[in-house]
Amino acid sequence: MIELSDKELAKKIQHTNVNPELTPDDIIGLCNDCKEYGFDGVMLQPQWITLARKELEGTDIKVCTALGYPMGGSTTEAKVFEAKNCFDLGADQLDFMANIGFIKAKMYTEYRDQIAQVVKAANGKVVKIMLEFGELEHDEKIKAAELAIEAGITYVKNSSGWGKGGHATVEDIKLLKEIAGDKALVKASGGIRTREQAYSMLEAGAVLLGTSAGPAIVSGTGKPKSDY
Image (cartoon, rainbow, N blue to C red; front, side, top):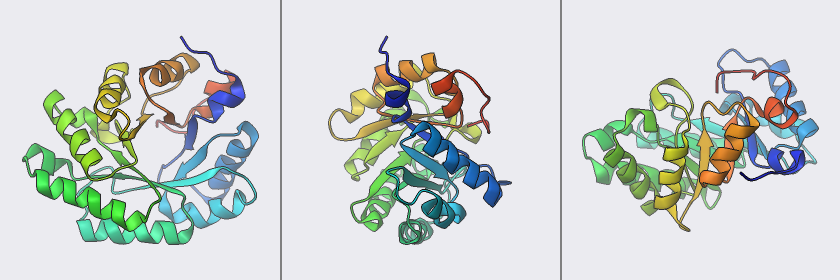
């Protein structure tokens, strides 16, 4: 198993809390965690982008946000508008969910085109697709990832970590890495709570981890601030 220093491991983590009840004080605390531990980025709801941008000014910590979840059923036009708005507000990276129903219905053109339009709206910035593997059969997982990569996505991500999306597994991350090759990067999210789990995801092919348990993973103490 790989072994990383605390600092090296922190740089693989996007510190996450997307719970709906958060207040500005919670967001400030989340950003302070990022500064204390040196996480790669903070992941939060779009409404907090401006506050996080202010709190993290002068650091190299990325402001990341998520949209279109936990259902993924927003129209393509709505997702495109939201993506542009998030980047205008100061987000560095965007994680979004495509319409899983398109995959289930074999509406592959609609699925790929929606992702391609969000990627275009990002204008060269990093976009990650939340594939919600917990809702998909094996063949559907492969198709969903392949189409997302065809559409120009930067990262393929196993799950939003919410609802039916499911937790990251070594098998799913290995599958994503096999599909992605050198055409896209892999992010593991959902249920990553320990250093051992973090290492197993990185060994399987992930280069980023989404988790609310970053401080506990790095320091070995403390509790996650959400179920993500």
